Length: 358
Ligand SMILES: Cc1ncc(COP(=O)(O)O)c(C=O)c1O
Image (cartoon, rainbow, N blue to C red; front, side, top):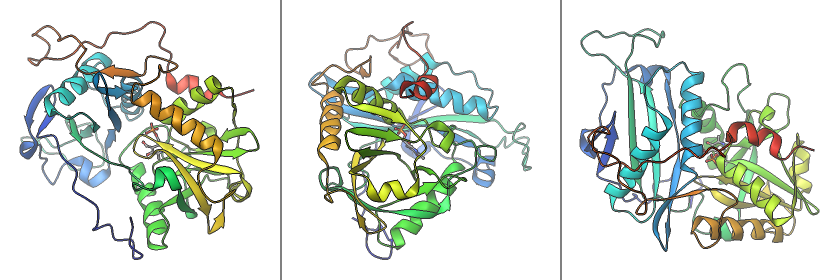
């Protein structure tokens, strides 16, 4: 997929939804614009999400919508973004966006950022004078690390760039500025001929990829770094932990040494974009037999069966867009789908931390 010099000009343009949700209204893709002096462009003040909607026999289904939007709200809270959107508002907006896009499957990108009040502009670092803007866009995105990656795996390197330290930039917030660190990791990997870079945390333990969590298979045990290794609490990561538990595979959160990547039997990356992607080499050292290992395949197969709605998930993971009822018309003037709160829901952010501990 990537040429040797790291250029990605061979990337295909995805199919894009022509409607964008903006602060409760639907606008045209071409009208979704910001002023160049917006705070976010200068100081990185955005938080966002990446969600997949899968094609199933019962129509498009959004994967773990509530958990993604809860993480979105958490990221906003960490960055003191005082908005008025509720979990229900945001989930309903996503469902309606997918419905309006007419797509059977798509990638969904909600973003909340500090913009510019053109009547009373403010240009300093202090974010508080700048108004917040919330948008949701959708597009059709194929396999993030290449079509072949899911089956054959990818070649990765350990990055010379460390992941963010917890008291500088919190990795548990999905904020735009964190992705400057991710871009350094990704660019270094690409220009050196790798598909992805794995960052270590500030102590030298394995953290995560530029846009994925990592899992190590050693014997019949699956290990993944804990949140304290400066990782994003991935929704896919949580799904894999639950899938392993369901499959009877031992799964543990552990700090992982870099060298453990080289001697692992299997390695795989997880993320909304990357889904479950095997790693076949690290720093040109072959991992296991150099392809997708049997445990990775078992987990991957179960993940894809669940996402296509062919097998029940361990929880209420799929929001079926066409089966959801329309909301009352006073709800921001658009036909939204009420996504009701299930009292059995637990915060993924908290359950992640305990799920795989001894
Ligand atoms: C840095 C980083 N880590 C991990 C992930 C995986 O998270 P999720 O599974 O919620 O997409 C992502 C993708 O969003 C990411 O950007």
